[in-house]
Length: 633
Image (cartoon, rainbow, N blue to C red; front, side, top):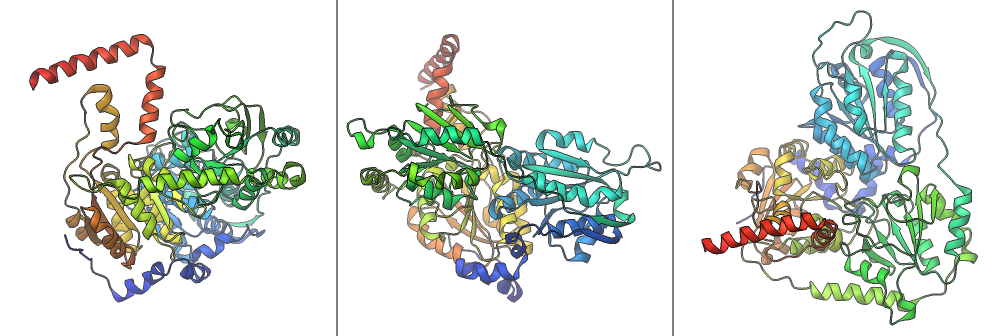
């Protein structure tokens, strides 16, 4: 099928030209755009002057350097949204409040600063809960400005949207600041930004009754104090002793908590001559082409290279496996560990900014409640004690294993009915700039991308890991593109995930945000099919409708491309990435016999944990169904 390009005005073209320029255009675009303020530390300014509650709230957001607010106005917040416009605070109208939370999350993960959404009470809050839950479980700093029904002596009963907003938000937020008086508004907002970033990042909500937005007061509100990062000196000393042991073979497992400490992490790895594996969320904390980078995970579910290097080769002393694990800024969550499948090293040092995360999964020798960057920086001050001699054999082994994987997948056979998703992932890596932002979603291919998509920079690879919120990538990518006008942004989304947020493509078209949306189309929840078929010899509730994606793209105002064979990948990817506007790329997908390490490892581990009675029940059911299938043949 030939490419189909949507209408593109001269104004829209000029708005999007920067997206083609890559990193060279980024510096100029950022310096002139709303993201410029994100690179600055919080200003020590006070909220001062006579103003309305809405004006005080917007002033507080501006002092925090907010580059965009995502949401939908409603009756309870029209005063606030009008003030956004009046005071020049950038905002983006979304199609659904789930998307507002995901966009704020995408903003936060891609900038390192809290993302902001603004929703009305009632359905605005309930629609946003799934996205806030993803931010909570994935440690992403988000601030939700939530309207509420009127309060005070004159407030009437049975107001519209009179759900218990605070109680609804509690399960998905670190902290909630319910405002009772107009004077409390700016302090609550600014404290929310501190709380969202303190220790383990996460979502925080400020709930404001709508009648307070129009009340006028004299404000003199200082910025809140910023608490120092956590630090445990005694635990650091014990960790230092283990790391200084010359007989220890050290490996590093780094997570999202290291995202602001990439230089320090690389320096410590080189100092210790330690291989570095990451969690899924941590991809990019060390360039994955670094000689000591081995990919994600270190068990049978994850990178082949990481598993082999951490396990070691017992025949070669200098290539023996890891005995001491330094886990830093990582939680050992179910997805990143393949259903808790990471092997247990002899010694474990666990460092995290949240004490609640420490020592929960692996048997741990030292738990260090500390900020990752501070911990790594302190290790570097003990370089003379920690420095290991160069280990060229280790680096050669890592390079050899990486080369073997590359050779094995250098040519991916054409499956019968479409594109092997691994071929698409490898082609995307070839064509996307090194600093492009790739947002993946809850598909089988998220595990293929985690293993095979090489990440060169921090905050360029994103996945909804621990809440597995389907449909996250489309709005999250749009939210990031809004504040990265000079960066190329792409999504890798399954057709089932796209059904949950596809109408948000209209937002990209309306605002001419040039995201490249790659949708893997096989008309099925293939992830569930791969889990169901071996266990039940059949699938249930996994077949999707066949959609006309070309018509969808034209209806929503996007350009369109169709990829059905491997020999189309290079040309169609170039066309999509060079187009100055948003593009929907439908990729006819055929998994054929593609094996997924994560699924195979999790299936084996789950089966091992079944009781004998449970195993017997599964086997009896499968045997009976297999017999019936044979008889029906």
